[in-house]
Image (cartoon, rainbow, N blue to C red):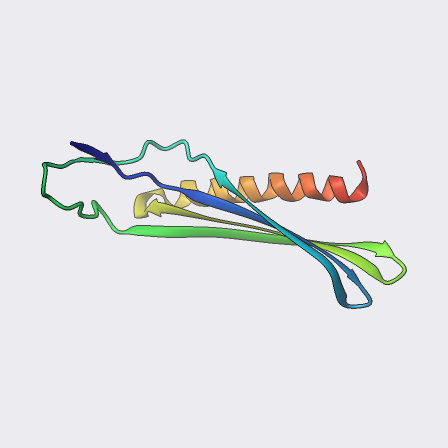
Length: 115
């Protein structure tokens, strides 16, 4: 029986609307993120248990943006992603995380500005 260990990453986007320092609305969405690297797989026989091939690391990246809406109101956008990876994949995972956060922050920023 072949068992595949899959690496999963989840991205998170939070949008808050504030007026005079008070949060009026807050909306958080999560979405799975595709990772291009092929996952490691392990062959197991019946009755055996899965052992970790190597210790996993977790790379995270977070960015925020606050947009002034006028009349003492503002909208804050926070984008966060955490990606599990092997130690030798840290730099690649960081580049992927940074790119993903930048794309989502730009997209949400355009929505807020009505572009």
